[in-house]
Length: 407
Image: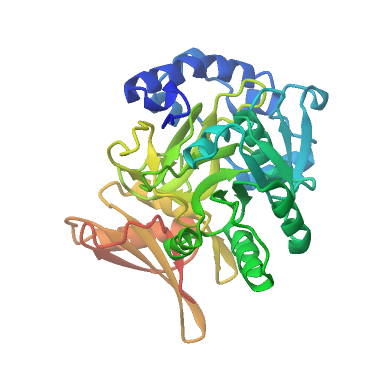
């Protein structure tokens, strides 16, 4: 049995990087045919964006901004040049955010994630993601069919009918949330139903701790997890190495300091920013609001693409202090004004029945005046007074948290 979906997965990393950035300028040129991208990328020469450094100079588009943008210029906020009728399916996600499905084979890039989880051509797959208006069900459906699997479009819920389908079609694979897989296995054990045909699973959409992974394995199901969004499809996926998640091919994934577009230091936790190379529906530096960190070295499974730790929390840590919003972008601005500082964290607490905040800042060595200077910058940027505490280099945790609301 082949271990890899195709030769792209085992390319030399330098070859992959060169191939991606060779394609990027043409994708940028096509993106600017859409009015919103034409405005966002005004003054940028696509031919010059051929490296990580050049890409990092482009503006970030935040997923949290999409609902307002889509409402102002329906359906796609002006970020898609092609007409809705040129796509295969049209969806909506809460927000609302409107998402089109392309007509190409495997439009959501999920076949290789299923392959890494052990799915193979000819397998029957029980797909329990929702098929109603949102892309989830169709992401895994299209991906499984691109791999050559037969799909049972079960959707979530209705365990009794699910058991009828399982006992009739004997699916070897499951796709859905880990929670619903556990519900099915528990209900089958209680009700004496036979679901023993299910041997492997690709799960997403909910936490999948190691304890639950081990429970699934003890019950005969080898389950792997994937990370994706309704905008981009499958972004990264677990492999048999069980060492983080491997980034999907045809995507450029950056990890940036929350509230900025600036890359983090290697290994630091930051926000996921993705650039896709689909010319019909490109995403240029889409900031997802999710935190992760890159893992060093290559995977033992032989795949050579970048690996991430998986989902590590939310990057949008905006909070209200004394009735005013404080945002990660503001903390990043303080860091820019004081480059001698390292990692920053604003801790929000209550003191005497009032909101209070303390900016903790790493600093290897500081002049006597720095404390007052940073306090003045904190007030100037946030319009709020707060204490400043200078700590040693490496004293703050590497968890991507810029604002810690401890009230």
